[in-house]
Each structure stands twice: as structure tokens, then as C-alpha cells.
Length: 415
Image: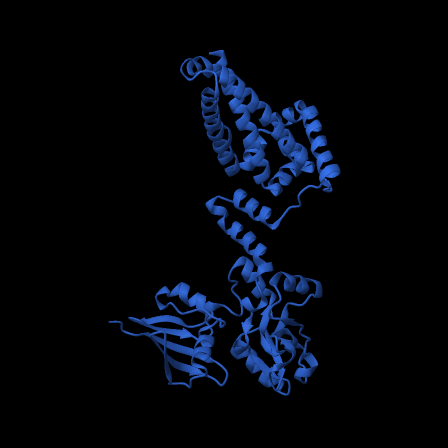
């Protein structure tokens, strides 16, 4: 009976070292750093392991080898009276010992502990922090000998340089930390916000800008009265000022400047920065913060105006839709009959599909319903005209020279 307990002890010890090794490799280092900063004793212990990871892994390897040697020896003693009487003490019995011991070690000493520990790596390390610290101290001498010997072979014989370095925190560590620590249903919004913020570096300006066809602008030669009328009709707080057409953006005017009773648009014209459409949102947001500006003109690879982007557009990528001057709710969006819809041309395609999924409008380089119709039909249909796209009829209810304002969408009858 004592022999069985000894065998189980060394098998558990092997599982402990194997599981701790994979947990150390799989753990989220940011979560450990946070625990350390929170003055958690376990967090401080584990964090020290990561300062010299090669020593910790060497300790686990030495401990596992000692446990496996002891397990093999005592298991052989246990099985010997049952196997050698009919298999002899030669190669046959050795093969049987090897098969049994290998199978037990692979299942209970490797596969099961590594699977469980990798799924809950940080939790396992924090729970086992004190036993791990003990074995790191207890096995310090054999670990030092093995590490020194291996370093000597690698450096002097193989010729590989030996560098001691700790792993830096990565974006993946932060993503995993967010997923692990914010898991409750009521924290889903916080989790989404943090994830969106991480994704800013992967989104380009072209993903969230107001496209060229949606820009509300005024010529720099227009009068203040005309500017006031544009403000009134558009309900925007800023109007883009152009010289002739949208490819010649001069700047913009903020509605608060009208309180100064300016004699002309040129007197209140504000400079606007120009950014490429392939610039990522994180860099643009940093540029906005450093410069103190909150609006930029987006240009394409040919130097033409692709659209306008504001700080609000970037914040919406993080926090979701912000009710302000470009609200979808300000646009017409009604189901007026069976398979018939009245939609503003400025509504975004993904917003329409979320509201009326049965429409299944295709996504593309355009962002709005107006852009979809113009790009697909290769022109701006006149008021009263209708076009058929994707088995749907789009009847133009209102339009101006540059964009479609209101559309009646009719689902075609399918056989």
C-alpha cells in the first residue's frame, strides 16, 4: 500500500511540473503584472519567475525528470512480481514495463494536466505560487548545474549567443486580459469599448469617414447669408468651404463664428489638416490630440478629396453611435408597406441591414444607400426615376445635383 502511495505521489509531482510549465508559457503576463502592482504576494512571486524565465523552465524540467525517474523505479518494483513470473526478466518484461509506464505518464502526467493548466493558466499559477517558489529554491542547485552545462554547450561548442531577457507585453496579452477579467454580462459594454479601442490601429480613415458625396460644403465666394442658410438646412456645426469643387477644400467654418457678424466667409475661415485615406485611426486620433483639431479632410492616392473625418467619427468606433449632427435617427427610415421602404439616401448600408435585415443590401467601397445606388448604377438617377439592383427597385423620391436624398425601396416579388 505504501508503494502505491509513493507511486501516486511522484505521478502527481510529474503532473504538477508539467502543468506548471505549460501554465507559465500560456499565462497572460499583463494579468500577472496587474496582480503584482496590486501588492498580491502570489503575483509578486510569479512576476519574479518571468524576470528569468529560463531558470523557472529549467526548474520545472529538472523536477519533472526527477519525478519521472522515481515514478518509473517504484512502478517497476510494484509490477515486477506480477509480470516477471510469466514474461521473464528479459526484453519482454522490459517492453511491458515501458508500455505501461509510458501510457500512464502520457495520460496522467502530461496530457491531462497540460490541458487543464493551459485553460486556466493564470489561476493555476497564482494558486501554486508558494509550492512553485519552494521547488525553485529546493531544486536550485541541480537547476543551476543543468543551466550552466547547457549554456556552456550552446555557447562554447555550438556557438550560439546566450541572452537573458524577459518577454515584453503584447497586444494579445491585453486582449486576453480584457476577455478574462471582464466576463460578466453587465460588463459586456466595457469589454466592447476596450476591444474597439485596441482595434483602432487596424482601421483606416476610409472606414469611418463621411464620404465625398455626403460632404455639405459652400463656395468661398458665397455670402454670409448663404452660409447661414446652409447651416440652417444641414443642422451641422461645421461647414466645409471649397474653391469651386470638393477637390479644392480651403478650410471650414464653425457655426459659433457667426456670432462675430463676419463680413465674409474668408474672415472666419479655419484651416483644415489633410490626411491620407489609408492612415490608421489610432495615428489620426493622436494627431487630433496633439494639434487640438477635431476635423480633417481625407484625400485619396490621387490627391482628390475622398471625404471628411472628425474626432466624433473616431470616438464612435470606440463607444458606438453618438447622437449628434450626423445621427441616423434624423434621417427618414420607414417601412411603408409589405416589402416597401422609404429610406434616406444618407443612411449607412450596415445600419439599414441591421434595422431591416430582409433587405440584404450588399456592402462595398461605398458606405451609404446613396453611394450604393450611384456607384452601382454609375450615375445619379433623377427624381422620379427608378433603377433595379439586386432584385430590388429603387425609386428616387428626392435628389440634388450631387447626391440622392430620399429613396423608395421595393422588394421584387419572387416566385
